[in-house]
Structures are given as structure tokens and as C-alpha cells.
Length: 431
Image (cartoon, rainbow, N blue to C red; front, side):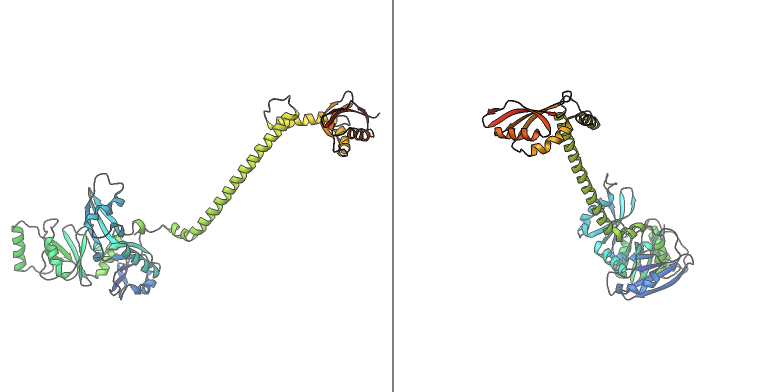
């Protein structure tokens, strides 16, 4: 665990409802047991809520519920080792590897030590602990919490089963009925070391040891913390007795093994606090995305409208002022149009074309049959020449009569071409 804690709660889990659950609160600082006990089963975990409050929780996985083994690592699989490991074990396991959690404990050269356990068991334990209001910091195999010895194994009996630790990453949970057979099948890692025992060595034990050494066979030393079973092979070396759960709690605290890896890796504190806001953040993200998309579409639409307006303004500019071939900028177009309007308006005085047009508009509206084909304004002569077309001669006479009220009117020759009558009208201001 990170940092130093004053107290922590250790719980030995069980996959069977009727199996007792051992627990213990240990204080590293005081080096003593604060509280300990046994629950009737996993359904009573809520009784430990008071002890779990403000204390880290370490859960011990019974070695009988998992497999600790070794696997050879093929060359070139180092970077993808976590993903490859389950499939390296596929031929050795009777279950589908997708249903198993494979945790890398240690790697040495091309050999990996792994712990294998079913996903459903971890999920069941974590779910029951969460219902009891507990957040587990570490999940450790119980046999790997026993003390580690360089000259042999360590062992302790718990719930009528023997926990045996062989090395840094290996151990088992053995029934007393087949423990002897398993020990005989093991190869001692090193030769036996003579250790002074609290109990005197009997003559028969000494002779048996001398016989083994004479045959060149190493003697397997087992350091045990609970009374040794009878008629067991190996050299059973007694250690100062103490509560097995106390022994496991101390080992779990210092252990670097934590099965909470991969999908079970604990979230950091800030991730945990942000989790309740995840849905809100997703919704806010969707709203923000929608707003951005709408804004982008709106800008695109306005840009297309602006381009259309520019194109139309340039078309009108070229129609009104055809002498200007190039339009380098919109400000240039605007200045030229303003200058032309000023010239047509007579520089803001009563002279110019615009005053004529203002007077003509109400007159022409009274003779809708007339169509003005073109007009020519001569400011120096003070006259406006209109070229018009109508369906009947009388429409020209009607127009002349109305214009005579405002202007001096000179009507030119009228010509009939097909169904249309064409003619010219020259207007001058009355003096």
C-alpha cells in the first residue's frame, strides 16, 4: 500500500457461503492486533463496516481459489505480454481463457510467474464488499503473505488446510491428506541448512537426515508457525507461533502482489469523484457539439449569402458602369458607385438626372401602357430624351398631355411597327 497507515483491515475471502470468514485489524505502528474475529459467511460482511470506516481494506484470496504457475514467454512478446499471457496458458487450462483473469506476478528472463483466477469470483467478491461499503485496496493470494525464506518453504495451518509458500511468487493450499505426497514430489531449491531447534532432535530423525545426506539428496526445510503434522517428509523447522491471520496481515501489508490489475485496477481519486458527473459531461459535450455544428452551418450559410450579394453587386456595377473592367475590392466598387450617383444627382443640387426621374415617376405611373426603352440625359443642354413604345398612338398623346404640365415637351415622329408604336419624347424644364 502507498505510504504508511496506522491501521488496516484484512479479510480472508471465501467463495462458499457457508465457509467462515476470518478478519483482523492490524496496527503496524503499535505492532499489535486491534481487533479480530470470524464471520459465519460472506453475507455478514456488513458487520465489519465500522472497522472498515477510515481504514484501508486488504482482501486475501484463498490459494484454493486460484492457480499460481509459470509459463515460458516466447521471444518478441514483451510489449504485449499482458495480452498474450492468457493464450500462452490456453493448452494447459480446462476453461476458456476469456473467463479467467491472468495476473503477472513476476518475470525473470523468459519465465513468467502468474496467478490465474476466474473473473466471476473476483466480480462476486468485489460486489459483496462494495455492498458492505468497503473499497478494497489490495487483493493478495493468502499463501504469498507467509514469510519468505531463502533456505526452504514456510507453512501454516488455517481452517484445516495447509498454506505453503515456496518462493516469491509460488505457493499452494494443501489438504493434510495429500500434503505428504506433494512434498515428496518437490525438489528442494537448495541443500538443507542445519538450524537449531527448540525441540531436541531424536536419534531416529538424526539417522534419517544422515541417510538422506549420504545419498546426496538435499533436505527440504519447512518453517512452520502452527504445530507440524505427523509423518511428513522434509525438515520441519518450528518458528515462534502467532495468530495465522496476524501473520498473513503483516505479509499482505508489505506484499507487492495485487490481483487488482487490468479491468479491476483501482481508479485514482479524481476519476472516482468525476465518475458521478460522467453522464452530465457527456450530455454537455453533446449539447456543445450541437451548438458548434449549428454555428458552423449558420456561418457557412451567411458566407454563401455574402458571396451571392457580392456577385450581384458586381453584376449591377458592370451594367451601370461598363467602362470599369476590373473590380479590385469591394471598397473600390462602393466608391465608384457613390461617385456615379453623385454625378447623376448633380452633385447634391437641383441639377442632374435624379430630380427629373422623381418628377417623371408619378406621370409614367398614370400611363402603364407605355414602356420606356431608354433615356438619355444631357446636362449641358438641360434636356432629357425618352425613347418609348406603346400599343396605340393615343397612349403617346396621353403621355404628352400629362408631361406638358411639368415640362416643355417636344414629341418626335411616331412609327408603327407591327402591333407596337415607337417614338421619342424630348423634355425641357419650363423657364
